[in-house]
Amino acid sequence: MERLLTELAQLDLGEAILTDVGSAKGNVVRKATEVFGAMPARFVPGHPIAGSEQSGVTAAKGSLFRRHKVILTPVPNTAPDALDRIDALWRALGADVEHMDVEHHDEVLAATSHLPHLLAFGWWIRWPGGTRTWRFSATPRAASATSPESPGAIR
Image (cartoon, rainbow, N blue to C red; front, side, top):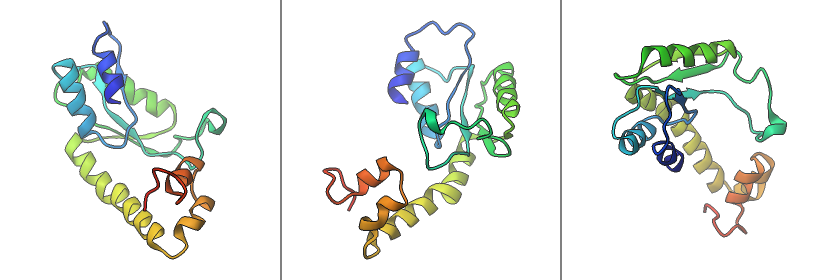
């Protein structure tokens, strides 16, 4: 995301509206502020809380966001029309949209999503046989990263 924001900051974006779909907002807002010189008024940070273990174009599903939360985290200088349009985009996809400030979002997601994932992953790789059986429950990329044979294996 940092490289993309740096590249975008060099362009004339006119009236374009920017958004993102990352799970942490504080780092995105800090980097955008750094590379643009101020947080762009037409950048609406967002976090769709939906997905599956599958990835890529072949895993696309038109109903992916239906009845799933999307959290938008506008900052004080966010242009109201940009926020309204991004909100409307997600609602058109069937999402349940909520707005909250960046810090609150990151606290909520750290407690309800990131920490539980970290604890489960830590338990799994320490469990006897966990790294041998991981490939049956993880995406190919995650299984590769945790394989004992992988040069970048997590141990």
